[in-house]
Length: 600
Image (cartoon, rainbow, N blue to C red; front, side, top):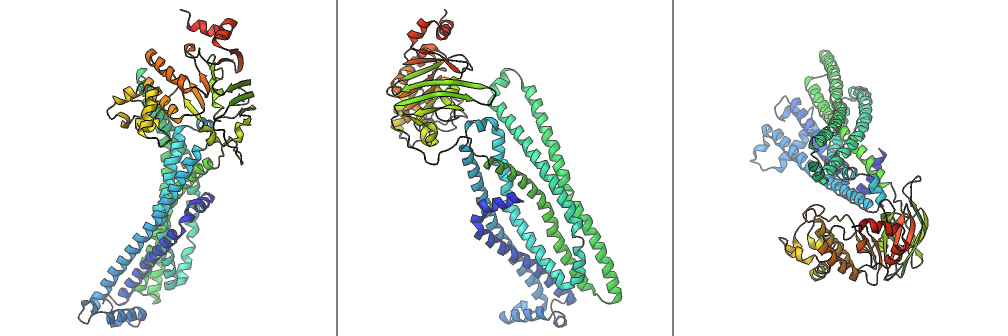
């Protein structure tokens, strides 16, 4: 239960006044239940004369209470008659119980929802601080399950079920006290049956918690599969693999079904256990009452009232046993949530960050090495300088380390050896967010958000429409944007799939132009454009690259012939460096790649 204590300390404690207010109101609702039983006992003792004079000897306090109420009523009121007093009292008690229960539940539900809202926002903010390697290890389906399903299970416990638990606990406590008042010896005997319920339920709780851990993991895998299939639906349809995907989905769904049934079997056992124990207790009470009535030590009214009180105690205990199943599910969810929150970012953050230069003059790679694991070295001894206003192109075959190298600049990863500096300062000495704000990206895989064209270009900036249009014109995107149904206010489909690849890339270029960063990273920025668009955008990029530190990754060597320098990477190290003409003259790796592309 330590995770619940942690959740209470982290999130629920801030709403303690709401919880205390809700608990007090629910406690009053529980006391109303005791008052109902006491009122019925008053009726039974009075032999159903609804509070006449014969009740004064056995229920003097209740009769006195009645007399006091009568004195407050008008002389002509029908409630002054004994026949109407108890029914009116019963209605009043039910109304009070309903009011206290509703108000208390509302306060506790509000507290629980606000607490889990804070938990969900904290979890999302924590994900946003993670490095890209984290998202490679944890599939999207798993993160969605943590953020939605697991937090939803916690919200149920912290709001509605917590209010229900408080209501049942106060009712059970009040009824237990009333049972002690009526017959403390017999009530203490009932306590002996406690272990008959607690021990089996405790064992079931452990099993439910284990199964639900596995259930949520299976749910994550199913969600991840759905995400992959829907995201790659064109591949699925293009290869006619619908039956294959249906079969795979059915297999994952069957696993979820089996785990769900295991959890259901464990949960369903709790109610029969309570029923069997309750039946045994009832049989014992009937036997005790029969002997007591025969001996003249017990009257029927007292016994009937005692049975009502026992049932009023049993019912909340039965509900609490069922609530325990939900508690175990929420406990498993909290375990998974806190396992994520306890994971710290792998990129170390300096406690005293240095200011990032607003106009950096030199980006330097000093004997940089990198590996994703200890076995596979991706980069080896990279030493390279890029000065302000220079454009350095990175070329080479697939797997040469080009994308990995540029990913080190915004600190998506840190070098495993060597260092990268900006104006002589190690990148690790800067605040990572401040560093990334000085870098503009245009990636090979351009994914846009389900938002308007304007908001995609102005992403993260409060830019005016004029500035957005200006950036779009420079990226040669204004013409096709103007032809969209709502122009710049046109909402895009998921990942921008309602646009062509070239259109998406030009919007990404416009986004980089609007940001106006001193460092620019272009990863195959024109790869998805046709020849006409490529020439237009290439002119825009050349204007953008003026007086900036620019790194360009390119497979189409025709786009980098004007680069200040071309660096050829092969097997993770620098094979050649020079201008386009120098490398062709050298006749090495670059000349070979150039010959392959321009062989015709």
